Length: 340
Image (tube, rainbow, N blue to C red; front, side, top):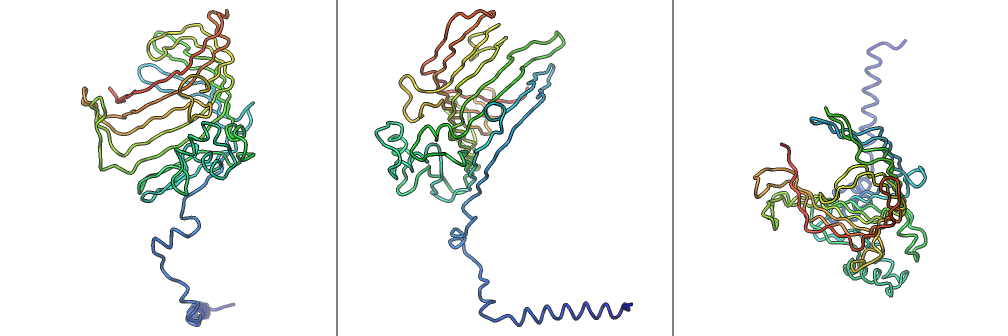
């Protein structure tokens, strides 16, 4: 049995041994530990940003917003095609330095075109090369402290194939129904929603300009620290029942069924630079309304561009033919959202 004082002596001896070992290291080895300045740190692996490879499937039984009544989204699922895993996703996350060029939009296409892997005889490819070429780099230039998140694919397939690139990330969105409930009863807005398609390059940027502000054309004042969203996508097949809803607050559809829905950008006059995909952009920040004086969430510089095909358009379960929109565009849109 070890007596207490013996145990204390052993601990002191071990500690002393560690000190002796440390002090006995060669001075050349100790000299290897040197502080790194910012320039040196930028060359260290892991300092340039974070890459996340992601696969997932999301199921939500119901999502409800309750005020005096309740708006409910029921049986929602986001996955890959045919209820498979949503995969082949790659997120790159960077905090930009001053004037740093980071991946954005179709910059990967520009990189391939510059390497001779894609022909600039394709007008979209030529546009991407002109838009995203920054000297010897490809992307968009950002300011110091900007948070830049780019969504692309882990594997784009054949680097000479535009089809592989555009169809690298497939998705499927299913919603059982969207309903409202109140003291007078309930109503279904949409039901049996199923959309399949592909996600193109998507970017989220939070600008590091919190100390500044700007005035929009309608007089609203918004913070310079804003979230900027840019995305491209395509719906290749979709169906839904449009039971009761407003479209842009102008048209009210009721008892409408749509089959074979496609959303893209392959027709009309505004296809350049979109590679056949629909596009959406928006900026979000804190703002103050010029008329109401209310402070809230400003959603501004909103733009949506697409061609929309509805080959089977039913009213009351009877098809009335097909409906097409070409160069469908929402522009110059600003919203101020606040509680009341």
